[in-house]
Image (tube, rainbow, N blue to C red; front, side, top):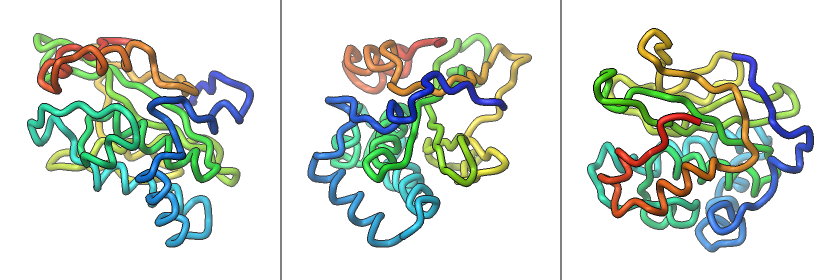
Length: 201
C-alpha cells in the first residue's frame, strides 16, 4: 500500500501530544534508556520498541481485562492495553528516541462476521532514513496472528478483506484520531470499549 503522509513537516511526527504521548514520564524514560542501551542503530531501536509494545503489553481483549489504558505511561505501568494504547506507546517510544512515527487505522470486522459490525483497529507507521515510511502493527500475536517488524513486506496483524467491507486506510496521522481518544475516555470499561470503538475514520 502507498501510504499517504498527512503532514509535510517531519517534526509533526516527532512531537509530544500530552497527556497521552509524553517522553518525560518515569516508565517511558526508563524504557527508552533500556532500548538505547541495547541497540545503537535507529533500525534496531525501532525494532526493540515495536517488540516492547507488541510483547510486553497484553491486549486487553485477549485477557478479558476491564482496565482501559490510553497513554504510554499507563500502558507500561499496567502492562495492558488494546491496539490503540499499544500504538500510542510505540509512537511515544519511537518519538522519544528521535524516530518519526505516526498513527494508522484499519476498519475490521468486530467479531469476524458482517453481522457483528465494524470497528477501527490502530497501528503505526515508522520513518527510517534508509527505508522511508513503513507500517508495523504492535497488536500482539496469538494463534492466527503473526505481526512482525518488517521494513519491506508488511507483516501486519490482520489481512484486510474488502469483500466483507473491511478497509485499509493509507493515511498516516501525526496525532491519534479524536474519535478514538473519545471512545477510550468515555467508556466505562474495556468491555464497553469493545463496542464503543469508532466504526470508521
